[in-house]
Length: 258
Length: 152
Image 1 (spheres, helix red, strand yellow):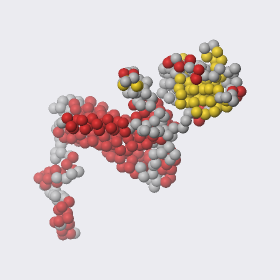
Image 2 (cartoon, rainbow over the protein chains, first blue to last red):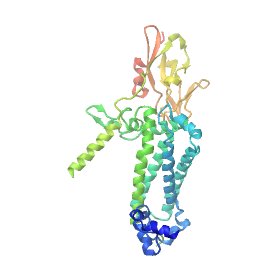
Image 3 (cartoon, rainbow over the protein chains, first blue to last red):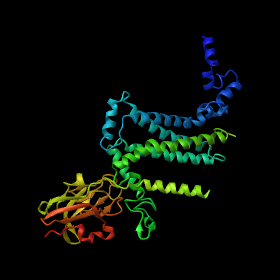
Image 4 (cartoon, rainbow over the protein chains, first blue to last red):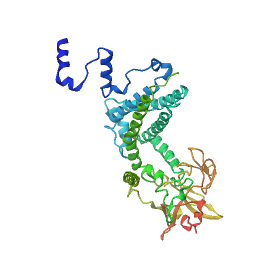
């Protein structure tokens, strides 16, 4: 058996994929971690206090794992859901019976709720440990942007079952958008954006209209929210997560007591 | 640098314009509601509430009897108010806005009265309603004769 493993390890195929074999000492361990695309997101060594559950509660890591669960379950759900007014509700109900793992929809929803809770706990923990202080102020701002994206992901995902709860929640939420200053038709300052006597911001050309794609919450809104929920917002969140983790590394790892 | 900024700006403007569709699929809001005789004085008719989101009311406004159609959309955040015949008022179940029979708001978070839609009498004494034309009381538009029918 060991001979076979040796043969594999010395083959050209293995060497082209794995530049360094499994580590046997510290130097090799560093080499393996640093030259691996997936592993090099970790630093070579970390401070001991970082691993204490009472310090970080592991909330950042748990949130990231939940986000990845959402992506995996979300993509799988996309095989069984059509974002049209006629099919959305029926497909959602049918998921329980048609999908081999009928609880996948529930898993997606529970992970979403858990992610929002964990994000709040993570934010609370960062505040309590003072990990927003210089030089980490910018990372806190990136974190706030991630919080907003999480809430938007929850909001857009909420419409997709296309049931009564979804429709009215989005009606109320999008009606709030029309009260936005300047770009909302019923908000203060909407008259300021008038070009040559023509009102630029009306109920068919304000922020609410862009969100819904028409005047009411209908097929256009469902499709837009679907694209936002499945493509645009996850891409933006993924990008910000990468920046967020990059900044942690560059600021010297998870903060600790001086 | 200038070229880059200009290109970026054009791209942003183009994307924003892209988000406004050229055409939307929406039915015309015009429909025939029935002969005048089917709406007796005092009635708050909800037969078209499900399909067209309007009540047809034979009530009183500015001291004169009027037939008008109110949109059943709460002016707070868009829920559907409920007509309560016992209390003679519209109450919104979402956040508790209250409107009188003529549509004027009197309690709750609603900032303005319910909206009227265009209503007219056809040549053969039928009521025709057009939900695409909306009249706001707070803009003085309820004085527009297109927003009510005077029963003879």
